[in-house]
Image (cartoon, rainbow, N blue to C red; front, side):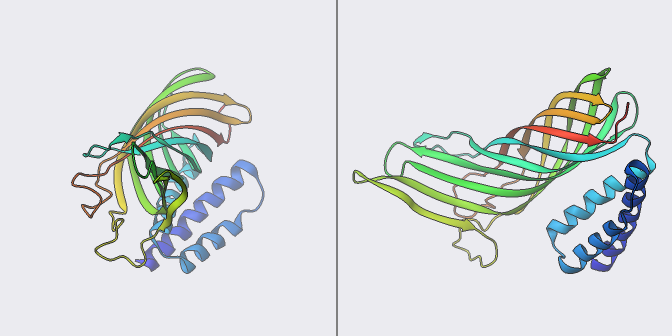
Length: 267
């Protein structure tokens, strides 16, 4: 498997190198070397996601309307669970950042794969005892969005599609008042998956399939395309994997707004 992925990354890198050279000029031979070294030294789920994204972006080299770029934005997240909390469950803030692309297949239709780091999780505010319990979940996500756009230079668009996510880790903590005394960081610990046992609360389902739906506006300029994107993402799987967290299931919910910049210009 590793040898197959190494060979595929090499081919993808050559396509990307050719695309970037035709678009921007210059020498991008280091790209092939970098991706091969990446696969040689780090063979893991994270690199498989990078490989899959490279496969998609590589096709831009043979498509007249292929664009690549970056995105960053703000999230609020919670978990859609099946038990009641004695208090409030506000959405937890976080952020997303990563790579974006868009392959225009006509005047109105395009495919937009992304590879992003995104923060999810939940927050609980109890009426007594420990008043705030919070968890941050770090994910590597690969959305594959199908986009319909309308307008001329300033366009509106809607998009939807599947999202493949991998849970990297995170952190959980609690703060509160116990017996009238303020306790700061009553507990705080990292969420890791190295030394799990049956009693560990996050012996979890790390791979998640979900879906995103949303829309935004897109401005095509001589310097590239700028997008403001609003999106809702729902996970389908039980991330707790039925272990110790509750009698119900935990599913991620995320609402995010992002800025996306894509090149080359399509004007």
